[in-house]
Length: 455
Image (cartoon, rainbow, N blue to C red; front, side, top):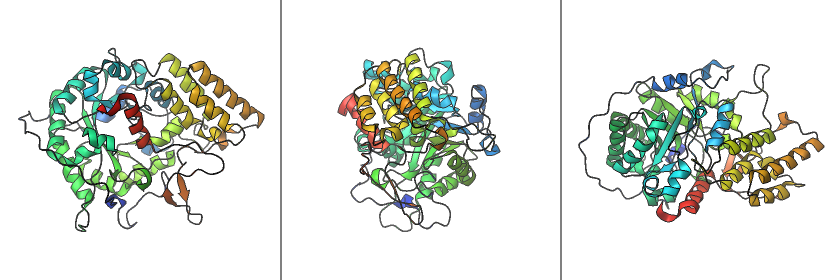
């Protein structure tokens, strides 16, 4: 199961009540109440119609539960770049999000804008596409969304980032605890855009020692207000903002199930978190009843995550060297720092470190190729490294069907008796694992390195 054992009904107290005393709730800011038009009613079937509108993905699934479901690449800074999105679409993804776009910087920083967007929009093979924005000023968010809406199929508001940089910038998961402002933002966007507005959310944090407080019920109350304000889709990460880094813990699928039971008749709902394999995708759909699954970390290592493998009717596993080659070829066609989606060679390095992680751990040749990736500057440089790893595979008669996850489970420590995850922490053993941090921390560092403290 993805990220250890997933919580199910009857498993005891929900981990959504995780307490972190050092992480105090943000100060709630009082925003002026604006008189805004009432958002139009939501067409419950809009997401399914959107998937039908772009039938470019011809992947056939052997499990009928996958029919008409959204299989989604998450919004990830320096990770859900255009070349990577197209790679994922080749292998089963039927909906993608742009990397998070900072609304204010999009308007004020020309370099940032040209990096993350093209005035001509994205290519037709990159649809359907939803652009994710972050920010807390309704009018700035709306102005940015207006510039983008003609080239996408929806606008998403980031209310999921739990990092300190989001707290300083007053966006992400910290907006969930500023209810009046958040509802105002959603209503402003939904009332003035021509495309659907979605919100990526987490569960609300608990209230200390109040044992009568129900995290899920309070979260549902907030989500209801977002839908009343015009949200057409919710993506729910089944963790709180306190569950991050070493305290990430299990994803609460039962909480997602309860949200679907309460609000799924009004808008489509996607599940995010705890997805490691296609088997997890199917299980999560069965447990929660969601309209689709969003993947972030797992799909970074294995872009064909949403492609069924294993049985005689399924596609064979795609080798990591092949995936690395295909990604680099797409980077040649769609440079990740032009009109686009990422920070050039840094973005490419990150993807190769994840896709080829198992090879970069190899005690014989891993260090050499890892160091080479870190200093490579051109596509030719990166391609030569992949060629060298491929040559090693030929020498040892490498069998692609035996490849397993490596980067995704890099911090996982399992109980030797039960197989359950007992801790999620950094572990560097004698094989000199690649020094890496959790994706959210990676994203935070990436944002700061690219654009400084203005975020």
